[in-house]
Length: 341
Image 1 (cartoon, one colour):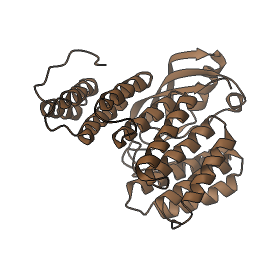
Image 2 (cartoon, one colour; image 1 turned 180 degrees about the vertical axis):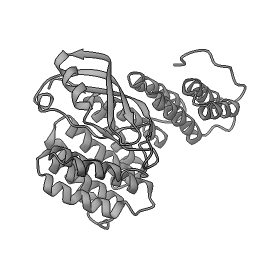
Image 3 (cartoon, helix red, strand yellow; image 1 turned 90 degrees about the horizontal axis):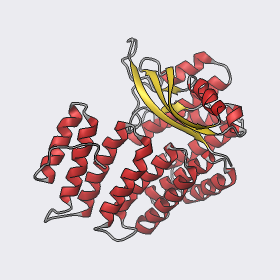
Image 4 (tube, helix red, strand yellow; image 1 turned 45 degrees about the vertical axis):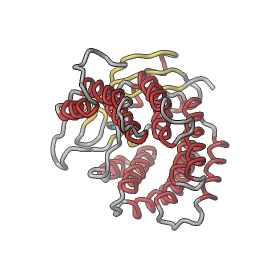
């Protein structure tokens, strides 16, 4: 698990403190190593509590995500689940967040089947521990909707979305969960080519979510702006695209590092061109545009890599530099995959 030798700490507190110091210095790998060591040492603490152990493991996972080594992330999270599993029964609430991260890690690798299975487990865990209509359960089912869409399983996505719609009908129209349901409905409209209807829904979401002080709501506004930018790009309207991307400046940034506001996928890939690749992107913090794409690893049809490399140049990221400044170029690693059906 650990990439190299790190100085052994005498207590979990010491390891945790040293990890934080290394994080401040930007030394992510040794910071992760010590965060993991803190979690291991805590297992022997006389006043052990599963919730504290969970937090230490999640802290280590958060650091690992910033290292951007997606191929190794599932293995690390499986080991974290094994560690917490030594102290809690199967299905305990302390396993939920780690399972959520595991599902996301599989999705990042393009393994939609495994991601779907884990999200189903997460939804079941939330339902068992907190109820079917709990925020966690509904959020897990929303992730199932997204995963099913990514797997081009429209029927399954709609079935989950209908279930969520029924569970959340009684919530106010401006409730965060209701707005998330509306966002997924708008995404469905985009997939169906109904950009006008989707745009109206997205603008309504932005109007209600942007002014909120709630981080989740403001993050939803960011995502809605991103999809409005996608619609504008698809309609050949670069001015509106730039304006929608600019509107995300100052909104919450994605946890775990920069993520595209949208991913434009060529029709040749949508229709069956298969392959996978890990790419290194150079992204401007001034305007969120991808300036360079470098292929690190690839497999499958070489045409897939060629087409995706060109397509990624059209992706947009959230601008994070001060408005009006030249900004800088940041390196973002992205894994892309399109498996045969």
